[in-house]
Length: 180
Image (cartoon, rainbow, N blue to C red; front, side):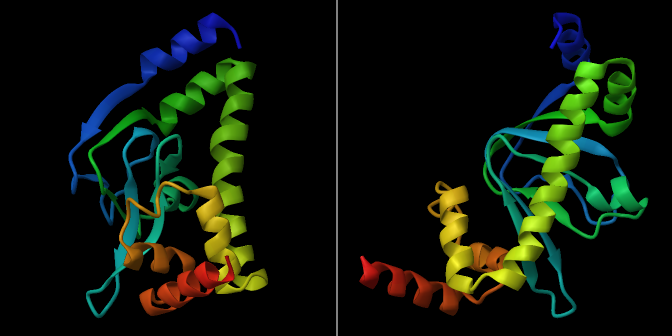
């Protein structure tokens, strides 16, 4: 990638620190910003009709997140994105990113690979895991893919992400530990 391309990108990015509990994206937001998590942990969740928070995803360091509802469907966000830990993120508006990438083939390819494909891959893999894997297999893959989250997030959040109850998560962990 050319130095000029990188400089253009860096000039458009802002850095923001979020305190634990601070919102990156609120439910109902139509903002189209791309966040790259440099440090910290972000939880996306929604509140159901019983007023229970259901965690959809946990985003640790070196992951990007975006208000996918606003970006792809021009709809308000159905999720809340909250810093679960003090978090540092690089932020760029999607509009600015598109403008930069339209003028630069190196940035266009990076955008396609990093933002578009990665987001779609995560969603597809998640859906696929619910169809093709047992809860135990989903847990084992999650631990492989995100080993440091297990000690950073409560079991109820991890269970939500895996589509199981906290009791099932405990049973899975017990089965796995007795196998070893």
